[in-house]
Image 1 (spheres, rainbow, N blue to C red):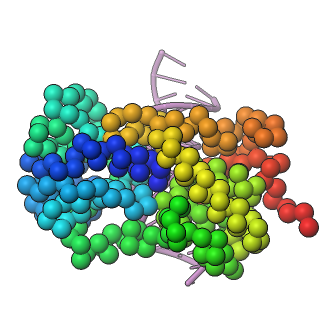
Image 2: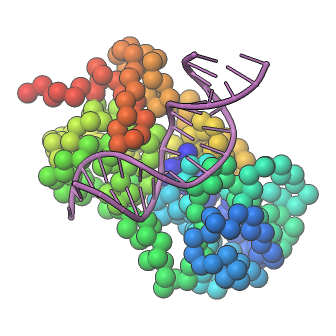
Image 3: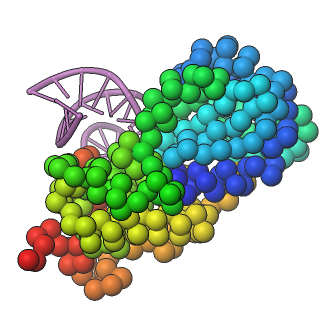
Length: 280
DNA sequence: GCACTGTCCTGTTTGC
DNA sequence: TGCAAACAGGACAGTG
């Protein structure tokens, strides 16, 4: 599932191909994935425009068009955004939107589970994209500090796992990188966010930045669906400590990793390295 | 305001 | 072998 490192990798891989290209036609294959405006208006807003640049906010990918419209993608679970050069082949059974560019190439949005969402928004209506408007500070940004984390977690009874997945608290984190960051920080996912000490929050702020930076450096994590803009897999799955390794031995202490549900999300952790009861 | 649950959705895995 | 149920999970609506 694409999280911040995956979206950033997609952005970087697409930009050299599509920046400066003009959108000549659009095929809407599953209209219900277009959340704003209505599909007809959506197409009208992006047709015959030129892609000026690509931005990312949290897990949202924004194609900035030269008419002050942002074409916004959220890939959710299984969405993919792939560049197909002219004469290139695309055989996906799950294509939902195809954007034809002026050099004969295509930008294809495919999505198996169809959870992904699309928007074409003028700059003065970006607030309508609720999740994006309310995004918290992103990892690796100057705003994502220990002081911020400490204030945001203060008094919170919610579990730290759920807290970190809340995009309003930290923008861009998802299930994989939260499990990894909590493991590296030695924090049990069921701990209450407000119970974390300053040294723990300091370590957590560091490990969140660490796993996101490593994920980007590895071109993202591919378990099943994720591909970058060129259709290539990432390699971070080879360096994971806990995600997808339940039942296997902890890379640090050898204890079998466990899997529980937290807030409805599969959660992997090491019961030895991440104790629930903190020794005083 | 906060914490939690159900829902959407379909390919894959698991169990019988 | 074949079928049905369970599972995967990001974001949001709804509930208490």
